[in-house]
Length: 248
Image 1 (cartoon, rainbow, N blue to C red):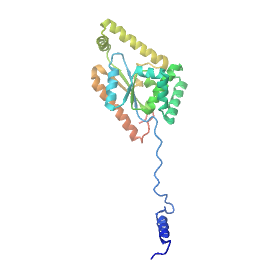
Image 2 (image 1 turned 180 degrees about the vertical axis):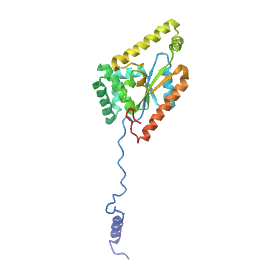
Image 3 (image 1 turned 90 degrees about the vertical axis):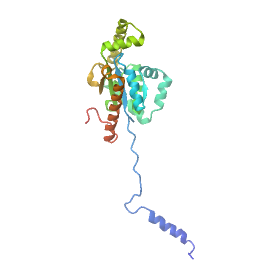
């Protein structure tokens, strides 16, 4: 028969045996790494009028199962207080800090107009870019977001093809469509020059320039999706860190 209290003593011995030895810290799991900001890649699509850029952007987004924000939606969110506030409230503190840092950097380097409406637009674009996995069409998104976490795409097409497309789409004569295409191109170029101090035709600012007349919508969309996957794979090989612009 065991002496009274022996069970308690045995339990204490077992606990001692299970305790970490000298210099052994037990099975402590490493602290989880802080989430990287931006959380994923963003695709910014710039396009010539009538080049099928919007359609191609939507096709690429479907291939990646990402969300699309077109020019009109970006403007609406930036101008409507409730929607703008909703975007901000969905940000983590780290993402909000990252977005504000890049906004101040753009303003300090005079790469962004200080006009309040443009600042609000930039805040919305940066908030979306902080979470990634989205395709932004127009509104200078590629001039706002940092190059390392953005796939900057330009869709082009020969002028006659663009005029013919807009004539059919808007049911205009070729002469009317010619003027419509040129006017929209001028307005888009003026917006970029005025508020971002860049020229849309500067080919060196883009990661990918695609001629939709030569390649077609489907091939252009597939190339964008493949380039996005390749850029994300490069990040994974770099330990989940974004490479700085020009990095190997």
